[in-house]
Length: 112
Image (cartoon, helix red, strand yellow):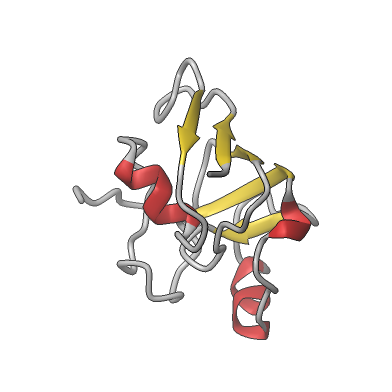
């Protein structure tokens, strides 16, 4: 079972976290299932960038980035070469280290 190490985030995971997840789970669902309330304003339909995260290790073990996701990532705040939309990133067999950016392009946070 792969582990996801979430680096400290001031609001979502102040102390960071280590999550045991099943392969085949989206990164967004894995975070939400473990109480890390990452934004997902489009309800995980690949229509926004609020669930943007940066995969610091294990990036190549995730599913391939599709063109639609790449197009959306161009609009994300703080995008880096290892950026993914967590709703589209499917966990494989390898451990991951994930950094959730401090900001999103969402002007109004919604309660999910």
